[in-house]
Image (cartoon, helix red, strand yellow):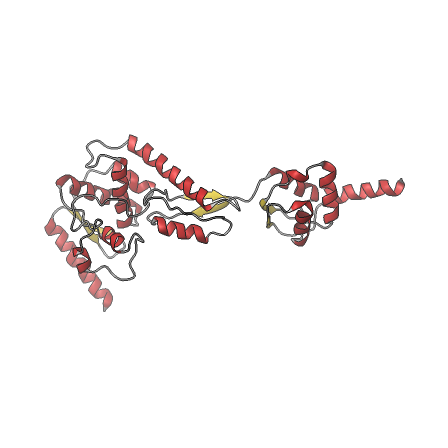
Length: 312
């Protein structure tokens, strides 16, 4: 009896005392591991000193079926009792996935496919422009298709909210058209402060019945929806007629050319007041804007001079 009592005292002391782990460690507990499989995995990671003691404690407390799979962060010195409580809590490691503005659906799907810790195939892919770029949190083992659905829900919710507070007398009638224009603005400039101004230029052109003449729309059509070319855009490309060529066709293209962020959506739905109709790269990463064709042509000459100097 004394020996048994001593064993119980020793076992309780080992169960509650700090464990051998020296540094914070993340460990994945796979589904279907079972108590023994979990204990052995914890031992191999240096989290448990006596796996048999952990197994016995779990069975004595009747929580074998309450230990949850997932990825957990174990703090240094965590005791076996704290390990058991953590696995019961299901408080798994929260991972982050950031989707940049302006990516196409195919580019986002490729990014998702490369993310470690996600399961499944993202297919079938949603329509272009249906995904909201932002940072999403997920846990190890979440489904890629579920992340895509969350992105779609976020885009619908954001577009609906911004649509309700849109400016009056916009030159488009539907949320879908606003999304198309926002995708063009997104691809035209990577500078957040320029988006309202770029949006105003396109809104002005639509109101006046001018063609948008946007290079990114041409690139989207030529790249079969990828959104990038492996070569510079040529003058002859601007003459090739296709549904996304805003040099040869009036109005908006038939669908978005990327997935725009909140700022671009906000810019097209509440554009700034402007009398500008043109813009061209200025060599600094931004654009030079113009009210008249003469002013624009002067900006174009400066841009071409800059390009020549860069090639020398």
